[in-house]
Image (tube, rainbow, N blue to C red; front, side, top):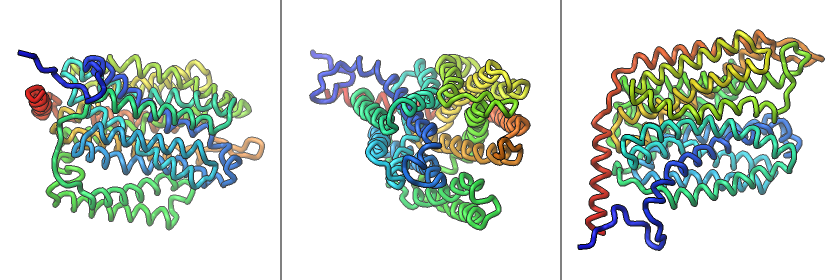
Length: 496
């Protein structure tokens, strides 16, 4: 009697399933790195874009703001869609939108087209939570921890790679070349994902909560727009205060609607459980602490030498200063998985937050010597690796299998909000601590040290939040996920 194949390959491919299985993790990880690179490559362009596009600096800043807003809105929405309609399908859609946005940036110099294209690229923020959910469904337990840790680290790895890469392209080639390069990489990522990644059989059926998605989008846009533009428009201005009041009102109504819905976009009853809610709080605080590292380091090393502390480095050299942190994130992700397996992910999260605080202590001790700057930034990156790798594991252990993509999407959203608040807070600190240099106000070293102290204090708060998370032993949701996956595959085998 013939033995059926465990998982039949898609019709017409003739590809051995074993090869596709081996490529699943590298393909998903490359998608996460590409997403982070895509978000970072525009940074070296920002000073020159007003001249290149014939627009104002305020208009150019929307190329960053649009990606932030779109990513924050679409991450939980696409996570929920992945749980309902198929994670691979939604993942490839997000990568395709990112690629289309890159093509539009390569074809146009019109600032309106560029802003819209960057908003499309914001859809890629959902790549990491969707990929983590796929890894939970597809991998055996002994491989899952290290794969999830690697996937979580791709954000920092891609950011560290993207800055020097983009700076080199901008310095030696036409700026559109950079977007043609990312377009080609995006197209390759879409093709590889569709070919190498299985569609997970774990689904949560029901109708998509359109009203909940619109309400969350409106509330988040008001909140993050106020945070990101507060320094430009004035924190006490009518526009900013109006946005914050609108955010509170809309999100309060959204919360009420979600609690009443039979199939809500976000299961708030799950969010309010301490194991899930405190993990989201820790993500918010860790996102704040992590983002200050790259943000402040980049400004500090590029400051003119006449300030007495600046090193006057180019944008390429600045990217190379941050590169060791990205390499460290890649190397330390397996260690994070081992610590989580031995001691539990909340211990890993607490250790990571404490390491971030230690990194900022080094920055406060010495921010004049380049080697100490690189060392402090690398220690912060190491702590970020531990923390970011532990967060999805905490979520996976605390939520049912059918809600992993949406729950991780909310966790990534909290990191995004933390990063947005960090950017605003650091800018506020530096603006209030300046001294004139050739008639131009520049931040003082004291301002930078205050920013480091603030980020370090937030990292310690994240450590406390991690230690207060209740026991993180595997939940029965993980066993249900494995049972559902095996059941679906058994059915496929019987029908083969």
